[in-house]
Amino acid sequence: MKLRSWIEGKRVGLIANPSAGKGADRLDAALASLVGCLRGAEIAAVDGTREALAAKASAGSCVLVHGGGRAGEAAERLLDLGVDVVVGVGGDGTLRDIAEALVRRESEARLIGIGVGSSNVGALVSTAADGAERLFDSDVGEARVHALGVSVAGDPIGLAFHDVAFANTYFGTRDGKRVDLDAAASLRGEDRPAEPRSVCGRGSWVAKNGRRVLGAVEIEGGQVVASPLNDVDSCRGRAVGGFLCWGPYLGCCGLLAVASTVMIRTRLEREDLEAAEPLRLWHVGFSPHDVVEVGGLDGGAVVVDGTPKHELDPSVAVALTLRENVVAVLRAGNPPGCGGAAA
Image 1 (tube, one colour):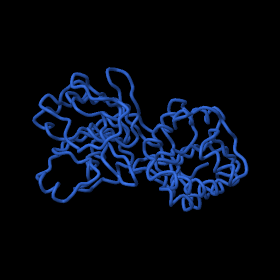
Image 2: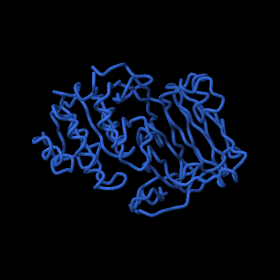
Image 3: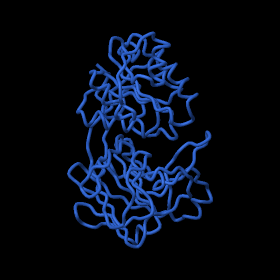
Image 4: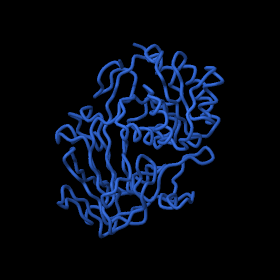
């Protein structure tokens, strides 16, 4: 069944981030198109937001809720209404905040992620904004998405549905351009650019289930990133398949990778790669029963799905655990790992 038909009669929570990506003009255009796709559904949104105004202007009505300044808080309020679907319009961070709320509430509401952010490459993205109408005219499937739980000294700091990067910078959009921003400064309320560099030194290490598997010899000067693997079998049989190639053989749905140079940056030129050759990679796979820890990092932050969450302290380890199938995302077709057509 086409998504446009399936959604008729459903209660749909609509959440948008006006700060995502290339600004309010692009967001308003995306919302106008999206609300048109939601005709026949009952739209709910936070009072006073751009999405509430767009719903009123196009659909003529909108169920309003109060509170919910951030995307996760808005999702909580909309879940109180018993919405069947949450449509998130924003970047990877916005969609992560919504998905975290779904997990906290143990909700079976589906997520439709409309990407208008700086990268939009995560598993929570159903389509980019310019593909929304095509999505609603398509048959859709329900993809169950994994996440990495991230904690520091036993305290959870977030769920990552795309990746956890240990870095001094994160991606942002300023004046319509994608830039590298200072991750630790962001946690102090400062917004400024920075040059990507390694946060790994001579005291850095990686452990799995209490056993150290990587130390400063491999890590110093490099970069550490971890991801849940939501389409791991697509890499089966490929000799060079990026960070995922060992996943189907290890039987794991999470992977931590260490690169011998800093790879996460807005601009990665050919000369940068040539200067880093031979590029070396180390992989640590993990399943739901494993705990992978990273320690001895300094001068940056734990960046969860593109958002700085915690400043790095070389004396404190960051722990990662895998959580399988925690959120249902609607996508065109029958995605790997999905439960078939939405019903």
